[in-house]
Amino acid sequence: MPNVSQPHIKAVFARNLQALRARARSSQEATSAQLGVQRSTYSSWELGNSEPNITYLAAIQKHYNIGLDLLLHAELANLKEFQWRALLPHMQPRYITGFGSRVEPKPEQ
Image 1 (cartoon, one colour):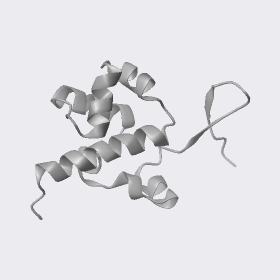
Image 2 (cartoon, rainbow, N blue to C red):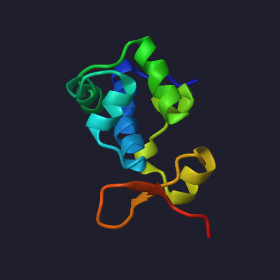
Image 3 (tube, rainbow, N blue to C red):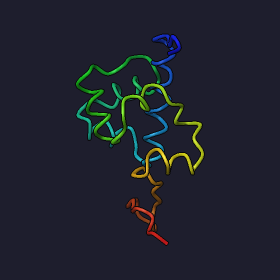
Image 4 (cartoon, helix red, strand yellow):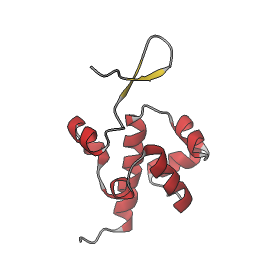
C-alpha cells in the first residue's frame, strides 16, 4: 500500500466535501445545519483549514452515505458521470424546478 501523507488526505477530504455538497446541490448553510455544526466550521473543512473530529467524520459519512475509503482517498471531484453512478448511485444529480428554490430529484426516464 502506498504511503499517503496526512496533508494529502486532508486536501483530498476537503475537495471531496466540496464535490459531494455540489453534487447534492446544497449550500454550506444547509449542509452544516444538517450536520449540526456552524457554517464557518464546515467551510473550514471544505477549505482544508481544519478537519472534523471522529464524531463529525462519521456524521458526514452517514449524511452522504459514503465509505471512509472514498471520502478520504478518492478524487471525487474528478469523477465522470458514469463513475458517480457506479460508485455512488444514491448521489444522482438534482435539479431546480420552476421559479422557486425547491430542489427535486430528477425523474427516471
